[in-house]
Image (cartoon, rainbow, N blue to C red; front, top):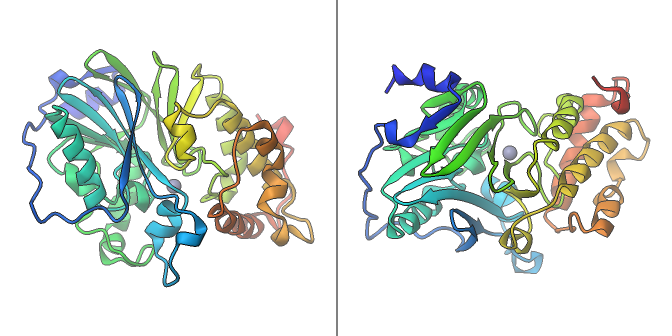
Length: 340
Ligand SMILES: [Zn+2]
């Protein structure tokens, strides 16, 4: 396998048939824990399926301590995706925990899948929590994701990176990509595209023949979570370039389940995200910046039907205001219209 990696990373196309894939499909232990939240299965087309978890009404959330899976994924809703044809599936992200990831694997195995490959969108914990379920399978991510996870492995396994719960053992992707790579799942073309949006190590998936983008965390409804505020101008530019790729439907990991079930978002989700992060930086010197509401930022996009306001994003927006203020308070505001 190792000798094969370098040629694959540079190659334009990879056929899964040439991979020495594990065919072992470990049966689910009878006492395997149930997922922390039920999963919904949403067929998007005959080879793409969304698995969705969470997004509870605010009134149904019980009081008590909250942890990173609640705040980062369950409350805003969390989707993962599988591209499947015949007995082969590519799985994009693994939820926050192994029980949820195992549920997806079991579902696919029951549908006849014997060969799995995993692709991680980026290093954030709510995307890699169930990676251990694919310890026997080829696992792709950007090289930057691999580096990040290897550096943070001890903290993640100790539960000190974002607090509890720990992810242990942490299963790190074993194949690091540095450029766009095509994988064939049967006859379905799948483009893995490193893209520094939301986090510098991001990887989105394009299904060019379906004109679909699996966006990871590069786009969210109600609003993106700003993890790396200093690079917002670059992310703004990258979002503009991504918009030109040719896809017409967008499926994010965190979005409205009703929209995802109907096939996804239009390009307005990109326009809204660009406007949102640009406004954050442009207003970061305002005296009242910390009290500017989510509604005041996304109102135009809500009117256009591009996003809707979901309660759990008020906390994400408050976090965004705080991190943007910290990163930009002493810096000149860039002219976004003149970015190279
Ligand atoms: Zn993320």
